[in-house]
Length: 119
Image (cartoon, rainbow, N blue to C red; front, side, top):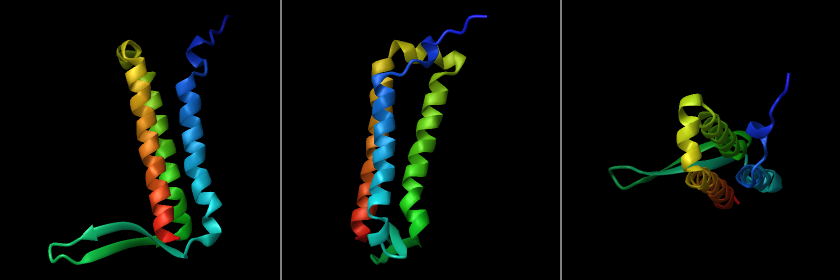
């Protein structure tokens, strides 16, 4: 029985995605001690014009975005490996990889914004 490793080869886009996931987590860990016990996670403007803040406990607020980013990456990576989708993705692999990494950049930026807003 021969096992082919071609489907499991590590590509540059996978390494970039992994680095972005690590960076997203590292931002939260680096500033964890400086963050307040209840962090602002969302800003909402009501119909009356008043700004309402959504707050969450520090562990939830710090690690929610890295968890969502990791989950999103697992989903988009798994979908690309499905038999019906694999051939379509292979035809536009570069575009797909760029889109996935841009998603992770956006999530990393949102983690930076949440941490910066609460310092």
